[in-house]
Image (cartoon, rainbow, N blue to C red; front, side, top):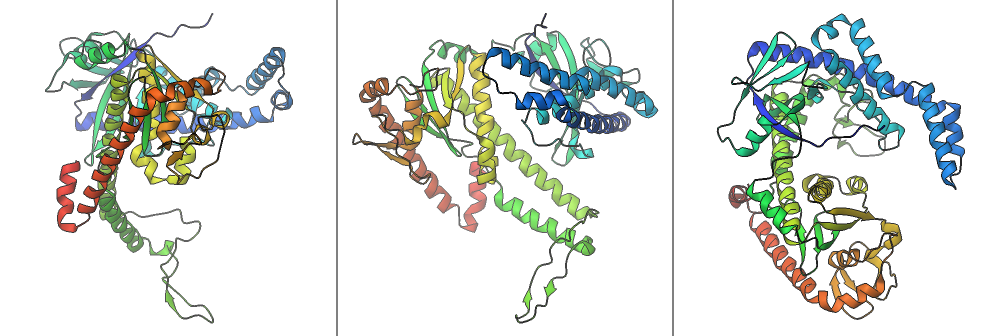
Length: 509
């Protein structure tokens, strides 16, 4: 019988850390990091064994035409995994044996934490096996941020008495720092049953801070004013079509439409980050001259031109000066602030869509990874993938639906209201329909998304019937977007002058 998953939510508190307790935490996290890397290496070896196994090769060649073929294929995959001992339980057992062989690891970590590390490595390697990731990442010292247990009965435990604290083992006690602004949400999480605890650290303003996340059993607190408004508005289960783009999202509801930018008014700190990167590169070149080619290169038949020395191939050892580390800390802080601002704005945008449009959402199944390869930094600044995942999570939490459909079958950006398809380049942002009207490309695609059925097919006749009613507020949304874009463009030009740069940063912060 399958195990029933119970709902859970997370409550986070900061920990009060002394120098001695931080030293002990460093040792335990280093033990967890080395154990994780060892288990991850073994997991990838077993992944290769699974792929080379005969049942796996037979399953890959099998053509699935019926349900029996599908069942046989799954059985062959399962047999290959069993032969290669690739399972969550097997890797938990390997993690336990490895920790016991390295005596100092088993002294630092409890059995539940060790087993959870095995599960963590198994899930990372399984993504590679399923084709959801190309490779795994072995953790460096600064990349290993968290450790967690399996239950609140042993290992990392939370004690919610008068003196609230986290106890890890017998000799490490970490008091909880209660925030100055205590609220009913924290009180609810503090009083709820705890499944297990997770200890993690973050670097903020160049300093490391430690936190505990209580994974509570049950549903989140639902008496906040924001949730009541959210629940009241979403009693209207209106149908919403959205079209996700690199920098904005088009939304069309029953009686309203909008074209909203991602991460609006979020500072990107581009100039500050570029300045720090130049300083870091100068410091690295001065500290590691042996890792660079000479700055001048003489070639026959050409005039001598100054050529900046490139990094030598195979350069692995790098010395970092104190100045380089200082610049790197400042750069990490700016990137952290940028990411936090962008997430906050995108969460607000998702809430706005639910409040004003509804919770039954239809969207194209777009590949944000392909956007990342093509647009690079623009994606990191706007974070459309995070927005989409938040939208799906909030829709399910509110009792609605988040449905995606194939872009290849529908091709909404090429489809006209009479059903014909005419290709257009990405630079064409205006849809000129064969029926004679013009509309913003993304708004029209979001409108058509409302009429996609369960078979990923567009109901053209229904879209044509509803167009006369919908066109006025689509046109209004387009004109509002034009006005907002003109205002943003003029503001950006005004901020271009150096004397006004500081004022712009203050206004957008």
